[in-house]
Each structure stands twice: as C-alpha cells, then as structure tokens.
Amino acid sequence: MRSLNGASVVVAGASSGLGRATALAFARRGCRLVLAARREPVLREVARHCLDAGAPAAIAITTDVSEPDDVQALAEAAVARFGAIDIWINMAGVSLWGRFEDIPAEAQARLLSVNLTGVVLGSHAAVRAMLAGGGGGLIINMASLAGRVPVPFCAAYTASKFGVAGFSEALRDELGVRSAIRVCAVYPSFVNTPTDLHSANYTGRVLRALPPVLDPDYVAERVVGLWGRPRRSLPLGLHFALQPAYALAPGLTGWLTAQVMRRFLFGIGAPAPRHDGSLFAPLAEGTGSHGSWAQPRSGDSSQPRSGDSSQPRSGDSSQPRSEESRHPRSGDPIPTQSGHPVHPRSGGPTRLLRGPATRPRSGPQVGRRPRPGVTLVTAAVAGLFAIVLTGRARR
Ligand SMILES: NC(=O)c1ccc[n+]([C@@H]2O[C@H](COP(=O)([O-])OP(=O)(O)OC[C@H]3O[C@@H](n4cnc5c(N)ncnc54)[C@H](OP(=O)(O)O)[C@@H]3O)[C@@H](O)[C@H]2O)c1
Image (tube, rainbow, N blue to C red; front, top):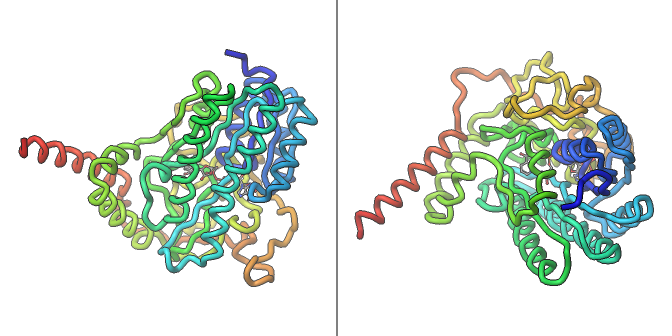
C-alpha cells in the first residue's frame, strides 16, 4: 500500500463539520489538499489550519457541487496544482426535516441536486482525472445511516442518501473490473457537526440529534483509514442496530421509527422558525468541525454558539481532537461570499439565511430529558428478539 504522505486529496464540502475534520486528518498525514465549498473565506482559514497541521500544500477552490462547471473546474485546479488526484471525497451535503407536504417542492429538488447530483458530478470529474493520471485512486462518498435505514420526516434526504449508496456500489463494481479506482461509501449515524444550523428545518421546532452522537474527529479518522482498507461500506454508530431490524421487519421498524421521530421532532424541541438553512445559499455561522447538534439548545443567550471551538464537545471524548479544535477562534462566524444572502424564492434578503443573529433559539427545557435514541435502539433490539422468538415458536 502506498503511503498517504504526499498524496493529493480533494475534499468537496471542506468548510465545516466532517469535511473540515477530514481535511485536517489528512493534513496530519502530510497530504496535499484541495478544499472545496461555497464559503471561500472559510476555506482559506481551513487551508491555513491544514498547513499548520502538516500539509505541505493546501488550496481553496470556491465550488457549488451541484454545478457541473464548478466541479469540473475543481478537478482541473487540483490536477494543475498537484499533477494528479489520489483521493476525492464527496462530503458536501445538507439535510431537510419536516412533514413532507410542508416542505416546498423547490427545497426537495435542491436537496437532491446538492446531495446526490453533487456526488455523481464529483465522482465523474474524479474518475476522469484518475483514469487520465494512470488509472488508480480512491473515491469516498459520504452517505448516512439514512442511506441504509429510512428516516421518517426526512424523506428527500433519505432518498438522496439511498441514491448515494446505490450509486457508490454500482460505480465501485463497474470500476473494480476495469480500473484500479476504488469507491467507498460511509454511513454515519448522528455526528456532532454544525449540521443542525445548516439543515433546512420545516418542523417548526429546534432540531436535535437522536443520541448517542458521534464525534467528527472519530469519523474523520475512520475515513482516513479507508486508504489502507477501501471498504465497500463503512457503517458508524450504534443506530445501526436498526439495520437488521429494518431488513427483517421493515413495516414494524418503520412504524416504530416514525413514532419516535414524530415525538422527537414535533413534540419536544422549543418552537423555531421554518427555514432553508444553507440549502440555497451558505450561512455565515457554523464553521467549525464540531457543532451543537449533540446539545439541545437551552435558549440561554450566554450559551456558546455552534462552531465556537471553546464549546464543550460531546461524543467520545477519548477520540483525538483535531489540531483546529485547539484554536479558540477557528469557529468564529465570518461573512458569506455575497455578504447578504438572498432568499431564492422571495428574491430579497432574508433574516433566516443570515446566520448568528437569526439562529433559532429554544425556550428553557423543563423536566427530565427523554432518551429517544436509546428508546429506538432498545425497541429495535426488542423487535429483533420478538421476530427471532416468533420464528422459533412457529418451527
Ligand atoms: N452530522 C451528521 O449527523 C451527519 C450524519 C450522517 C451523514 N452526514 C453527512 O455528512 C456530510 C457533511 O455534513 P456535516 O454534518 O459535516 O454538516 P456541515 O457542517 O453543514 O457541512 C456541510 C458541508 O457541505 C458544504 N456544502 C453544502 N452545500 C454545498 C454546495 N451546494 N456546494 C458545495 N458545498 C456545499 C458546506 O459548505 P458551504 O456551506 O461553505 O458550501 C459544508 O462544508 C453531509 O453529506 C451529511 O449529509 C452528516
């Protein structure tokens, strides 16, 4: 196996969350990095952190992954700068929550074009560049638990991630018989990134993750590990206990999941305005690897904002912290490219797309905090036992 040191790595979706954590993890191995997303000033900041962490070179290329010309230009810039592309990571993505009919059709279509078309376009540009460069390389596509187990009230996102799963498997098999390019897909459950700020939210409530929530640095390290062992599928997180339950009893598992999600999304969180998150235009806030996805917001304005590196981390605290996470100011909000994001439907500036000042606040949480993730996993395991026992009793 070739050493990672000096490998050229393209990360599409590198300005925050898992993309940022992954770029830094590759930087620590001495990789040369091409960082892509829409927030160019944030990418330049990530590039500086990558250089500090050990990358010999790091460049930032402004890219909208749903735009074929942008993605082609990204591949060309990577080859022009580093001669070849060894690893291409399709990390960019947004989620979209709410009752299906409440979410505008335009938002559903946009989500598919970012999450699914973006992965197809990125892989297309990567395969062409890798074949032209001699035929080898690694493509890593970020799917989700939602690419294996459907997530109710998140149907378009589920569609996009099942799409990424099917696409990655088909492409892997095709390239496996005619090239040395390997394709892997990663399926994390909930990860503590700023995704809660960037997700489009039509639930009318503050979004919360179903615990337990993974640490972005842990996921990033597992992504880096695919270089040594390019697996077809990398599932991460306890929620995968649901996968066999879903395979054996999709109706029961789906019903249970829908009941838990309904209560969790619409019955617990504090009221919040409906918004498109970063679906149509990037948001200023949420620039760190870590976010507040794991911590329900209390509505107390003294709480640190998501992306602030000073914020206490959740997830597995035994996992290594990224270099960037030790820099206290790395998560500070910066202006977006346009300075004044414009709502794509209204055509005017929108408070909801602006960032820190408009971040939905929740009211104080009262009483005992429910543990719906634990409930769901317990229900899945109980369901599995019930299925096995029923099968035995019939025999
Ligand atoms: N966090 C979780 O619980 C979780 C679980 C499973 C899977 N995932 C997946 O992990 C990936 C990363 O998400 P995250 O959790 O790290 O959230 P995040 O912090 O919001 O990161 C999303 C990244 O995608 C970029 N992006 C969004 N739209 C883009 C576009 N049109 N063109 C280019 N870049 C775009 C964002 O940059 P700009 O805004 O600067 O463009 C940002 O760098 C996504 O594919 C997500 O579905 C997340």
